[in-house]
Amino acid sequence: MAQNIGGVSCTFVKGNLPTLSVRSARWTVPGMHGSGIALLGLGDGEFALTAVFYSSHAGVDVWDLTLHNLQGSVVSVENDRGQTATGVYIERVHTLETTPRTIPGSGIQARGEIRVDCLLLA
Image (cartoon, helix red, strand yellow):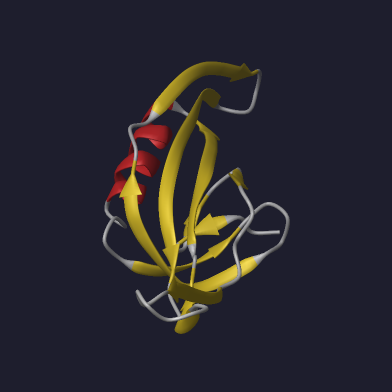
């Protein structure tokens, strides 16, 4: 599997990708019995992903900058469960959280984690 957000490779992309559902609005009119429902179209596509990347400190910093550059873009996403979605609007890329990680002989020095708020477009 190739977990990625907008082509930016990640070690893990955690979170389920939503499917759009029909939105509706219920209404009533004073003096009339019953209610009505207006179908508003497809929606309810808000979701959040957690992107994780293991690399050198410099590699994690570049990864962070690359993900932040996606904010405001419409991209494709593949999570670590193999689910894919296209037409995903990157609404907000949160602040990077880094923790030291060392795997001898691998060059890995850090673990970066970023929350990404998304919206699935119809």
